[in-house]
Image (cartoon, rainbow, N blue to C red; front, side, top):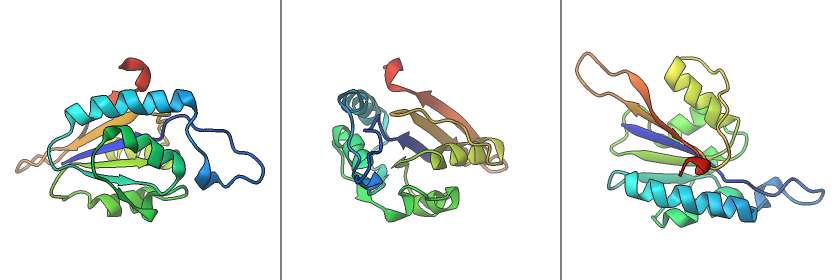
Length: 153
């Protein structure tokens, strides 16, 4: 099972009167989303499920991936690692799952899966953390397959 955690790309700063949910990507963020989306599309296994927070910045981040996706309120700002795991069906989904979401939840989930406790890893804007679970008899360990940021592509 593959779980790909994708943090939204760079977004506008919070402004008085502007809902956090309506913050849009900056021009730099749009470029980050394009670069990572293009790379990720080539890497994803066929049939991967893509789950996206309802915030504007995550919705904009996933667009360059150019694949069908579902908006899931369980992975919005303020979600917990448990919420993300439930949305993904971890540890037994039928296919790879991409979650396009937010810090600090993505970092907490990454550390929980890789280290066994929530340490609050920092997932940089626009970056992905690709976590895999072995599914072999006697060996169902979790490992970090890749960490890729837009500046690396």
